[in-house]
Each structure stands twice: as structure tokens, then as C-alpha cells.
Image (cartoon, rainbow, N blue to C red; front, side, top):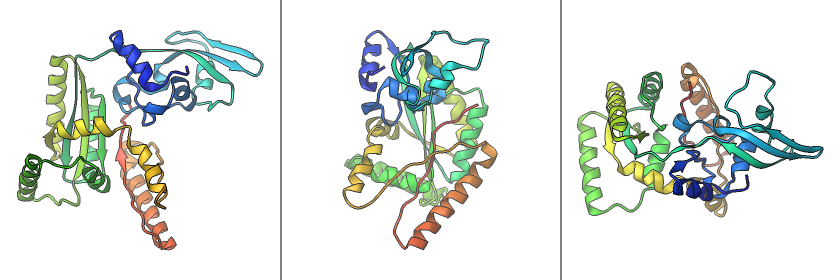
Length: 288
């Protein structure tokens, strides 16, 4: 249970398997830590959260050792496994865990898409979740986070600048407002045939909501930097800028209302305190 994320994945990959669990803290967190904090990974749409992956447990408690048999399901309850998941170390120290793994996929792609508005992006994610598509990642950023993401990209080459200029001109002709567009990342995993079918199905939904595919470059950049973002906080703190993240869940029908109220409250607080601030948001997981 003390194995760090990269070491666990490296050992599994050597045997043709993957855990599929990649939380933001992946680089410096452990399997036991994931279970104790009931963590969620970037590809939970496909693989599930750590609660879905955990089968058996061994926990050293103040009064003895607790062992949860590694079975996929049970008809008895309450569930001791559920008590340990997310217990934050209150009940004891997790020393061993049996988890579900899957074969390393033959094909893995994360593609970028642009939507004209936040509302269009959310609607597309909702319809993808309700469809027969089964992507590994369904993520859409609001306009402020989209601007942040583009600002964080690697220094563009001359070809990149030409492509960006051409894309900007194309979107301008379509009547898009650059300050309102939202970046989405959608991931696909599996056999070549499965990925091709998933891409076709998802592309149809994206198109229905006015979205536009922009290729693999955003996905490649996301893969390179996905574990870096949490540590930008420390960089900012050293310069007098506190940063933090909060998360919540809500039914599809309430997402817009939750978003609008939280953003209004946040900006209102900045105004009352008379301090500068930057708020951004993304939808990162869709659960049935």
C-alpha cells in the first residue's frame, strides 16, 4: 500500500496491465493514500474511482489487524470496505490492498475540441454521458480556464503560430467570440476498431453542439503537464498569491446554477476585499 503511483504503474505496465488511476497527486501519492482519501483519477469515466477499483484490504488498527477479503461484491452489509475507503487514517493504517487492474490499451488518444460557449460544452458532455460512447476522459474548461490553458502551453513554433492564426480566422468567420470559447479534452482507449467507433460517435455529438475538433496537440500537452498543475500553487505562494481548488458534484440540471452562483460569490468576495483574483472552472468527470 506504500507504493507511489509512478512505481505502481511501471510495475504493472511491465506485465501488460494498468491500474488506470491517475489523480492529480499521482507523482507523490501512494496506493494506500488513494484508498484512505477515496481519490478520483483523471480517467475515472472509464476505470472508476479508487472505491471502484479496491477489492481487498489489510488495515492495522489500534486493537488489531482488520482484513477485508478480496471479493468483487457481497450480499451482506454494512460494508467494512466502505468504512475504510475515505476514512483518512482514522481507523488505522492500510498496509496491503488488492485492486482491480486492466490490460494496457492498444490505442490511447486524447483529442482537443473547442465549443463556442460554456453552456454548449456542458450540454455536449451531458449528451456524451447519456450516449453509448464510453470515453476515458470527458473534460471541458470554462472560458477563463481555457485562456489559462492556452497561456500555459509550450512556446509555439512558427508552424504553430500559422495554425493558430488560421484557426482564429476560421472561428471569426463562424462568429465565435474568442473570450467565450471553451476547450474540451476527450480521451479514447481500446482496440483500433473500438477507438475509431467511439471517436465517430462522440464527434457527432460534438458537432450537434457547435463544437470543433482541433486534433491531438492539446491532448499531448495535457499528458505532459497533467501532474504539474497542483504544484503551480507553491510557485504562486512564493510570490504572495494564494491558490486553492475545491470540487463538488451536482446533477446535470443544476450544474449551470451551481456554476453561476459560485462564480458570482467568488468575484463578489474579491470586490469586497478589494483584492485581485482569478476564478476558473472545469467539468472533469461524468458519472451515471
